[in-house]
Every structure is written in structure tokens, then in C-alpha cells.
Image (cartoon, rainbow, N blue to C red):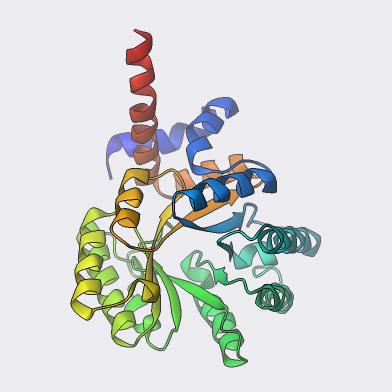
Amino acid sequence: MSTLDRAVARLLPAVPKEIVRRLSSPYIAGPTLDDAVRVVRRLGAEGKMATIDVLGEEVSSAAEAEEIHAQYREVLARIDGDGLDANISVKLSGLGLRLDEALCRSQLGSLVADARARGIFVRIDMEDSGTTDATLRLYRELRSVGRTNVGVVLQSCLRRTARDAVGLENVRLCKGIYAEPIALAHHDPDEVRASFLEALDVLFDQGSYVGVATHDEVLIDAALHRIRERGLAASEVEFQMLLGVRPERGDALVRGGQRLRIYVPFGTHWYEYSVRRLQENPKIAGYVAADALRRFRPAVRRGG
């Protein structure tokens, strides 16, 4: 992690909100569900699937958690009504996990049941390591009662991930963005990659459906090699990327016959999401700043 990355992350709260909005705009659909639908339709025209995320995971009351739940019900109805090739991703803290696990269980169960009736899949996001056990517990409870339209996320930065992967049926595997203590997580990039591939092998070997969620070329190439080596059909695995990040690589995956799903966040809490995510991982802050400069540089040259 460079000094520049850390500097970018520290300066974010002092950056005018309009500039943060411009920097984050390629990575967030917008403040409204209509914005998300517009992006999902565009992605569909490009041969890509989507997962829609409602921003606002940090809630401080049951009423706020219920509001997030209500917004997701609207998303499900819109996906169904508009025939979108999309599912939803939910953060359990947004459904009240840190307030009351019983409340979260009830709201999650309600969403999964609604989604199942509509033929829509629900991905339970993974957050910081303090929520890992509860997240896996709630996922397993739902699968045990036949809710096959629900999956979970594993983060390869955590040392426990290959063990957690055993027995899971449907997993999005990513590196993870949360700052974790070294006792719980790998900090060396090569160790995070090795953990990713170890977990990926566990999942592939046991026949799990995997969303390979990475922008890391080393991991993309390694995953493609494993897919070819195992003779996996296109329907048995998918790649996943964040909206606005390495779209040209995503296009190449689609041209190569791979299924690709794009993470599409939207909501009025875009500013808090942008600042918090970039501060949680300064390396991403530096990456986004560099990507923003790359986007703006051609315009400057044309204007000059």
C-alpha cells in the first residue's frame, strides 16, 4: 500500500462533496432505483448480468432496517416486473444484524421468500470479520429449509476462508476490502491470492456454483485455467466485477463466452458509501483516483 494511497484516503473527508460524487459516479448507478434499472438494462444489452445493492448498510434503529427491507422489496418487484437479468445483494447490517439478529433473520427470510416466489436469487454479502459467523449461520439456516435461491460471500483475505468454503453450495469469492487484524487476515497480496485460489479449488472440487469476483488479472487467468481444466460449462460458474471497474476486461470475458455479473449499487447514501469504502481500503482509494485521472486525461488532451 503506497503513501499516495493513504494520503488519498485521509484527504477524502476534506474533498468537496461534488468532487467525490464525480469520482464515484462511474462506480455507483445513482441515487434512485430508476438509475439502477437504467444501468442494468445497459449491461443487459452488453451481454452482462447484474446484482443490485441498496446503499445504506449502517443502520442505527429497527425503523431504518425496515426501510432498507422495504427498498429491497421494491427492487425485487422492479426486477420481476421489468424482466431484468438481475438478482440482489444484501448486507445483513442493513437489515439490523448489529441491532438484533432475530430482526435480521426475519427480514432476510422475508426477502428470500419474496425473491423465491419471483424466481430471483439473493446474495448475502460478507462484511467485516465480526459478522462472519452470524452471516454463515443465517445462510445455512435458509439453505437447510430449501431456500436454494440464496448464496453467500467469502473473502480470501481472511485466514479461515478455505475452511469456511467446505459444504457451501453457492458462493461469491472475493479478496475482501475490510481492514482486519493480521491475526485474522492475510495482509500480503500474494498470500491473499493464494488463499483465494485455495478456496476456489475447494469450491470447484465439491461442485459449488462460484461467482469469481475479482479484477486481479492473475486470479482471472488462474480461474480461467481451472475452468478449462475441469471442463466446467458456462452455466456452472460466473465472473463478477464492480460497476465501472475494468469494463474492458469484462467485455473480453463476455466475448470469450464467460458469464459476467456486475455489482450495481444505488441509493441516497452514495456519499457515505464512497468515503467509507475508500477509507476502509486505502489501496482502493489510490486505484480509484488513478482510474479517475485516466478517465479525465483524454478529455484534457482533446480540450488542449
